[in-house]
Length: 393
Image 1 (cartoon, helix red, strand yellow):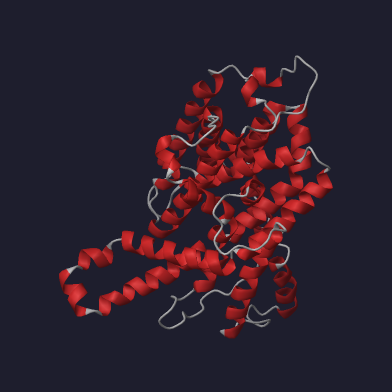
Image 2: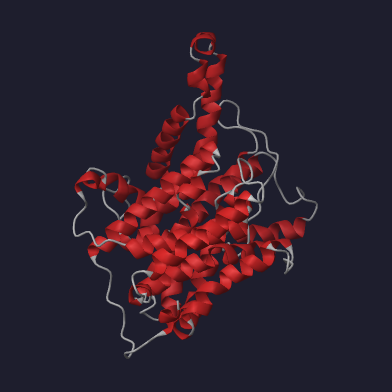
């Protein structure tokens, strides 16, 4: 990979990606979102191997961030956060109100002053916002411990926020020492995973774990936008990436990989598999001037997923819980229990109900993304807003 460091000509700003490149990235983002929903519903351990959604989404966001940083850094960071936070605030208004209505409050954890302080993380999630555990469900609507599911996606918001804030420094480091900058997060993941370096306190360790797991994906996205990957000989990435992926797979298989213990619980394996897959996907990166024939029919769906990516990601866990709760009630129908138990046990009807509920969330809450982007609110956007879609991921 030494070619990565060569700079034979004076540096010039990378040309903006062709429209086809954006279509390819929109497709990757849409696939990542769909895979996230399916995985959180089924828990199938092989899904993150098939498509490491989180690494892909961080890489696409890093690519967009590097493109945006051709403008003054402070304004870019402020703009990224402005586009991200209003949908999070809307989730917080609904979620915190529901938790308080069920008895959650300053004395819930025995530290009332800290409770109020931690509540500010729902406004600026530099750390994990607090939520109530063990809450009862809402009879006939949603199952127990719903607050845990609602707060589940917020780790990504926290990680994304820190990546955005650090991006000006990461981009400067990438330009000065490309190989070291890309490999540093993976090396850190290795030190943590092999027990050679101890993680500090819980709140700080979660941020370090996220950086070590997905930092290389974010930086690879930036490197692609800077044109660094394109300057490599074409055989480099296809030669090295599979080897890195196999090391990650070997590590996972030797650490009890399976349902309930997959890549998400193995940061080192996740880091290796994700960065290898991201490198290959960025290496392919076709420039479609138009959608290929087989994808043209999906243009509307892909555009919708990109335009409402924040809303879909923030609310999908809650939609899954509501869908599963409602589907489980059908076991009380004797005819269905006796004649089609296989249907009641299937995940596919629940997936359909989940996406119907997600569509309701898009209509009910999606306008917050338009306001955050200073656009006229739309109930059902028909096309992707490039900056808005990428700003989320």
